[in-house]
Image (cartoon, rainbow, N blue to C red; front, side):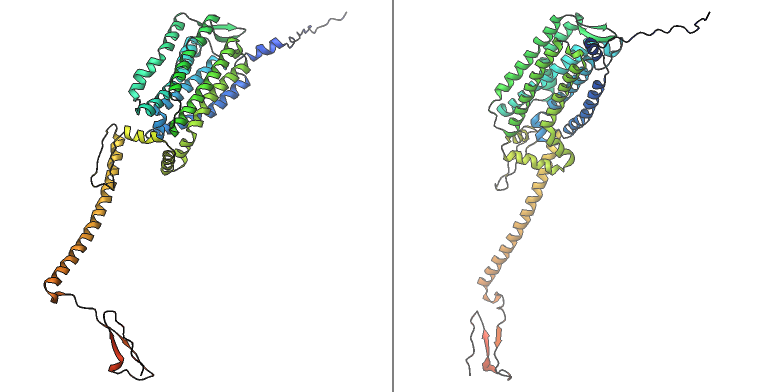
Length: 419
């Protein structure tokens, strides 16, 4: 009788591959598409940050001041906050329970919604309002006015909304099939998130854009068109993201990657469309290239650059053709004072040279007048007449005699007769 000493090895067949299993696998964070999108976003963010640093460094240039330097830099900051929170909220990577990334109200409402999306739309509206003040009223918004009045006023509705969402704990950290994610409590809060505040901000942008219609200044008209296109793209993306979030397609790798890629395009691409060429001139060309670019804009009707020169700093105007010089001082910042002083020194040196030349001409005229008066008073003081120029005519190889020498005096030339 033989005994089988080998135990029976039983294997279970893998579950059949189904469509539901495939899509469930696509919902898992940290897939190849997620890492690829993160790499693309990081590569695009590096020159984006460098470009904003260049604008900050050259923030005193009139072209960047016409664009609204503070608003441009703040808009870029809001865009980066929006993108970072989108990578977290859209579940591109795993969010461990109890970690900083698992605080759902912070990322969903405060960072992505209030400090990202709503802050970004508020800055679009403020940029259009800045253009309106500069073109229609020839005024500028001060930095304190922007940060202490306009931005708190525009962010108040979103802050109130986020406070209510935090208090009622509308975004909760849940687990579904080993996938940890934040989810809104019910669809009513989803509907309120997309229908309550976004139309308000787009309405403000539409109102400010309506006041700027028919803009004739070259720089302001270009900025107005770019900002309007920017807002239109944001509105299309808002409708697209609303449909994706409503249908929960952001849980799928393709849906979340497409949505976040649209955010990246909106933030990065439009910045380079507006600021790419001036940033290129500031980095790779001498300062005279940027000055020539601003002068060309002035020649084609960029009157806002001259308005900025009169609104900010010190303006010292000296007319070279006028007998009297008029100085108009409007002191607002130290750089303007230094620029006006250097310009005044250059004008002083130029006028000193002209005065020296005029004094030399005056001395020559006085000397000539004194000589004429001395001659009238005493003819003996007349300057000696120039020595006569003689012309010697010879015939053959003989020496000339006295009759062959004729003087040339006072321009009368006598030619000897032929013997």
